[in-house]
Amino acid sequence: MELSIKKPFFTPKDLSWHERAKWWKDKGKRVLGYLCSDFPEEIVYAGGILPIRILGSNEAISEAYKYSINPYSCYVTRSILDIALKGELSDFDGLAITTTCDACGLDIYWRMEDQVKGSFPFLYLLPRPSISKTESSHKFFRVELFRFKESLEEFLQEEIPKSSLAHAIKVYNQNRSLLREIYDLRGEGFISGVDAASAVFSSMGNPKDESNLLLSRMIEEAKVREPKSSAAPRIHLSGSVLFNLELFELIEDLGGTVVSDDLCVGSRYFWDPVSTDRDPLEALATRYLDKEPACPCMNTESKVEDRLNFILMMLERYKADAVVFCLHKYCDTHQLDYQILAEELEEREIPFLVHIIEQNIGTAQLRTKLEALFEIINGRG
Image (spheres, rainbow, N blue to C red):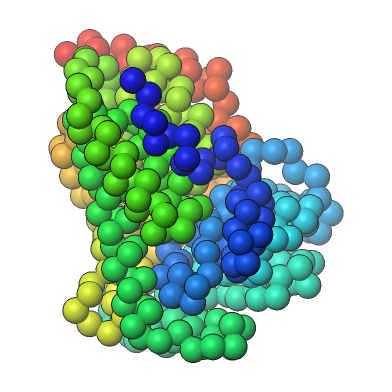
């Protein structure tokens, strides 16, 4: 039985980010785009603005190369700039960019500032420290969040009260809790890997109160279904941005199932809640600096160890058989971490494969790799 809730989900197959923004603007609302899962959406939501994650797309690039963007930037960065230059973000009131990696942080901000700033009434660069778990980095980020909030208030011409921030944190924490429950149901066979991924994609483009209703209904429907019990290879996905659900669908088409991940369009987006027993901005600074799974862009000394421990925890929690790394070409941060993570998995005799993607996931080549991996998994059983 197909989930009846799947239809209302906003996924890359349904509406483009541009169309979703237009739909919201037609209701008399404001829309702000952001690029990174380490962006504090709660501040935007508290101001009555809909934050929408801009992921880029696998469409051919036609405009970005005209403006001297580094050809060795990942396709995500080039695609996002291309979308903006084509005017596909024209219905957005603003764009906020967090300093993560150089390409998708500083470089893309400079290009936006130079080429498309006039398209956005509000364009903001949010500096985020690259080292977490220190008093100085937390103090710095708290100040930057306060400055961002002030800039947003100036744009809105109204104050964002602390009570609104506290409410936004509560709503977002509920969303995170619901997504974790969906992940648990996926691990138990009540929800497919594709449907769980659709739920996360939906949450990055829907108002969180609306998203929470949809997710709650999805959970209710899933719990009354018979769980799928099979010997299908259980896969953990590791990587950054995926433009769509193609990878999840390919794994399922080949007889496997995605049961866990540490993707920035997956668990890295929602896993950790925000504390509700302290000042809202302080709590947000702590959550977005210290959250798990750790962002590969961070330079915290324990970052790779933290990432490894999170992957191992997910493998155990969801009984995953193997890890599939899906990494973007020219993404230095992920590919540097991969060298260490691969060694650690090999020492533990955990099967894994790595696949480098750019505009598309390279279905034919990846299909062959996955078939070989599934043979290894089935042979171990």
